[in-house]
Length: 400
Image 1 (cartoon, rainbow, N blue to C red):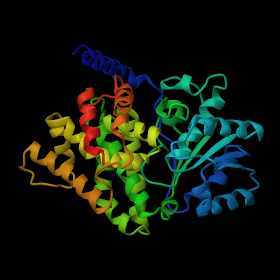
Image 2: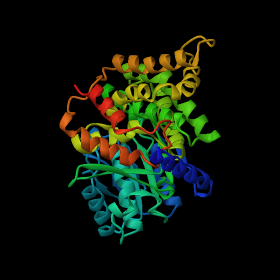
Image 3: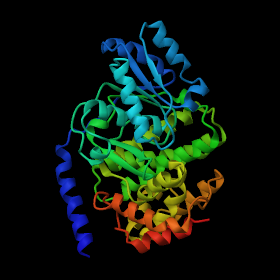
Image 4: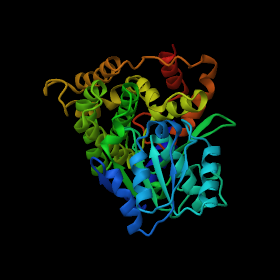
């Protein structure tokens, strides 16, 4: 009881001080081929040598080739770092920092999914604060300084990293995954070009789309919402529920690809101020320990965690269920909440997302539980503060 009182008091204090933080959103370049507007923008900002942070998969797909050619034709030199791994590590971040300094770069273009964008954010933080290590910046408001000009170019539609305060990194020595959170980590510019997401395979489309849904739902059911975050969360939920399954089956539908990018962005807007919750707290640690894909972990966990919260979230889930709607308007909150959770489970099944996580080992339950509770509390304004028993029950349900 005393611990719960402490957590809620901490969350209320943070919420009270939140309006005084330097919140902002990126300037947007949006629409087909909007990526090709970057060279002109760089010239307008008198930037001459960006460092492009990406990964091998993005480079091998050739989706950045038009941008690279446009940069060359504009006389803009660039350096590429493509060694980012899924669940980017501190080593990745340090390599990017060294490359940025070695080639006297003056801007960062992060191109890819959440991993390259998070890697680039971490590197930008280290460049801005060269005397401070990544572990020392762990947590909230530990950076507090302007980053180099930062351009986020997402090639997936889910993480919302292009608009968030968060940078999630993995410590290779401990296999622990944790976040740096500071308004200075919000990119200065974001490019939402749906053509960049067309090559995503169905499995990645599904997992990243469910990641966007998780961001929106966790933000909406939390206790630190504003009118802006509630509206953004509702927008994201409706866009995912009405577009994700279609684009999973037809990845070349540009309009629905654009809709999913909007969903990811809106979900990012929602959770960057209203925060996430226990789904992410567990998922981050599954990624840290096993390298399990983040979006996929969220997809598996989301319905299970929502059921674990119980009746405390029925009213909020009922409001989300009414967005489609999933039941008759006269249905009870409990009936609407159940319909919403069932819709998530049905979507997962239709997109071949498993109900369990095959790499999860029961011997790791204690460390996952402790790390997840440490991440969630006292910061995340979750609808219910989980106990160790809650965490164990969830892990048991998702263990294959």
